[in-house]
Length: 305
Ligand code: SIN
Image (tube, rainbow, N blue to C red; front, side, top):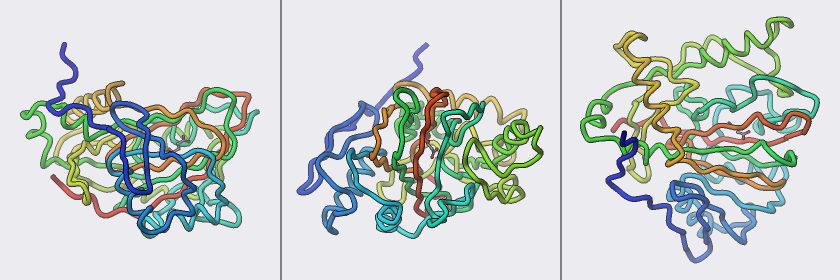
């Protein structure tokens, strides 16, 4: 069976600007930005960095010396901070979300462990997300992203036409269900692995309806806005009708053809365009500590095709 049919070829070519140079991670998406300190970029270098981000969908830089305060300042250059729908934030920096799993913690679920796009249940999900690695296990704990523009483009015209115009109900049912199961003994939902939570469960369950084929406000690219965590139904359809379609779309997007997987080092910063890619964290490093700091940028109400 011909799973992928790309009318347009892979195009994750190196970006070369006056200030910003990139080295692609995979054919599908992702690139390392070389020889920069992100928090020292002047305005023209930052403008190029944004172009590189929209080109590669996910960019990362090694050896960044960034405090949580620097991370916040850097994030705000992309726009106002996004809504943190999950955590209490770091004690002195409530807008910096710690993503931590201690060496002695064993858990079936971890923050970001399912195929997702960040906080898609919000009316204005984050446009851009940033993750800074503080402590990394000696192996495991990678993050993998999938390019949902390529995934859309690889569908037949008939399928694209069928999907355009549909709206997907994004809600946090699965997250809340699995957290409830995980905390059955303690009867509280105040933490996930080692992260203190602050949840508005009612709003998360209510969620929002967003276009299933989404137009990027800057590049105009069309992508599949659907994931394995928050997409629960299609507007106007029964769950019985929509489930096979949603399952198909998630299996389609999460094929290796569209993926780029990052092996973290301490002091890396990854930045992704949350409108047009899915990602997940791997829960494969029991016995080792992992600490990341995450910030997000407020996105627009998703645009339809
Ligand atoms: C996230 O989903 O934002 C976290 C990803 C990770 O911890 O690798």
